[in-house]
Picture 1 (cartoon, rainbow over the protein chains, first blue to last red):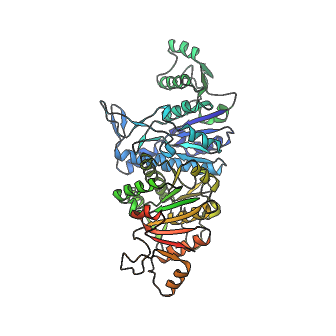
Picture 2 (picture 1 turned 135 degrees about the vertical axis):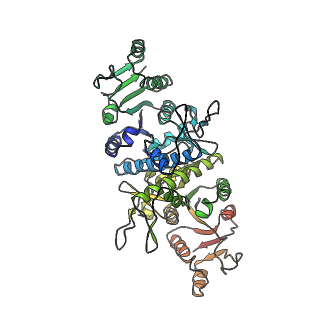
Picture 3 (picture 1 turned 180 degrees about the vertical axis):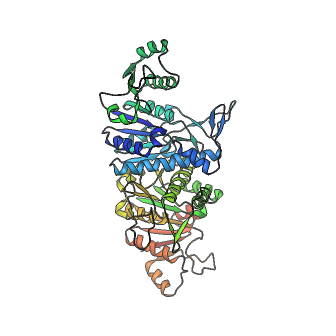
Length: 261
Length: 261
């Protein structure tokens, strides 16, 4: 059975019209589905208003005690519940979740080596409570995840792309998973300057070939590496595409880049 | 089968030590159980920090658009998820919920008559999704409710006592419900100046008798009226007691005031 695991980021969340359209499309997907959202700029804005400074070490964000409270409020409260309430009126029986709820995603607090990242959770597929997640899906409930996990009684901040990938790998034991990353372009481009040069199908052998030809821009490479990690761990398909193409990208004829073995 | 529905308020939430002890006791209850929490002073504090003024008309709080965002963050995010994460380490498989999640509590936005209360939800027992709530309990998951409901795509603010009562009435169709209100005294007192004058059992005929003798202080009367409303709507027992007596008050020999038909 098919399962769609769909991740949206700031480019959708920060634009009320785009979010409204996305949720309307998402609600129309008939197959089992899971949504993972980021936090967009709202957490930074609320943090600024509360006088909490964003801290970075070597360009990486540090989640200190004040910051984890802000993201718990904004990701787990404001953004998550607004999405859930909106989906409910679209006849989509959403349930808002963090990894702490139902022990759905148990993490490990990132160990301190050179840098103390603070309240950041590292996750693996075996930390996912697939039994409960499967039970929710069987009740036609639609899980909507905020990018938060837990360990030892604390809420932890975890990258939303990573959560999507880990959920996809874990649920591959039960479903044929298509993991969809909604991003700002229609797909992975052959020519980064040509928006219509989408590579619609990117099997591993074509990827390896294009890699040697340095076709991919730096920005897309980590996403592609993560995609193949997921594929090699059991996820059937990864799709990278635009949020506005969601209904096409959950169908047979996709618009974005379909990544497969 | 027994079901405990337990409401805690600010006197527990605002005191980290009291909350820790309460959650440790709560986790030990073996029967099916549901927790409802208020928001305590944290929402007011965060609202103040964000420069959002609390608005009152005739002494009643108005939930405007900014305020509903604050309580959605604080009740649905910060307070709720911190409780859930703490319960998880106590081997209590909690799931944090608002009324929007799983369409668990559908409300009606309070109609504007003389006063526009803003984003406030009025709830009735027939707005509770007992099927899904029962299914969660059957999976040994422990629902933890923030005092938020939903209607027409919006999150709404609803009194936590009312949510506890409405859930109790709705779940009485399936369970023998004991609804427990944790408050700052050990129970309802015969003499408001004597902390040990707890009326341990208050059946309706004794209540009616004491009412004519003006035994009850003004503060407790609305609570007692709500308790008998719940009892008359099918709830087996209502208990009013101190949070520190929780384990006694979920047993056969209760310390607080047990209200029955």
